[in-house]
Length: 64
Image 1 (tube, rainbow, N blue to C red):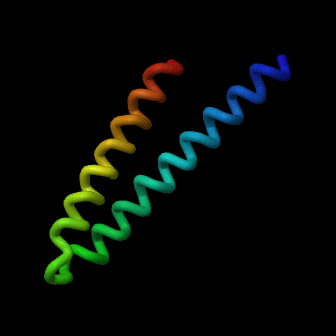
Image 2 (tube, rainbow, N blue to C red; image 1 turned 60 degrees about the horizontal axis):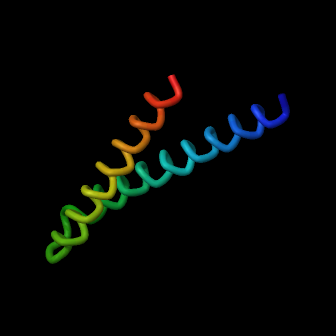
């Protein structure tokens, strides 16, 4: 039973880390989009956000 609780906590912690990364990318994108010369950084943030979002969805579906 203890092993199951540890595993659940790790999964939840991992999801929180992914969510924080995803929201940080969204915030940085919002702040950088109006600035000239930041197009490459914005595109990288969009790709990272998309990857993290997909990973979170996949992990959620995997555990259901």
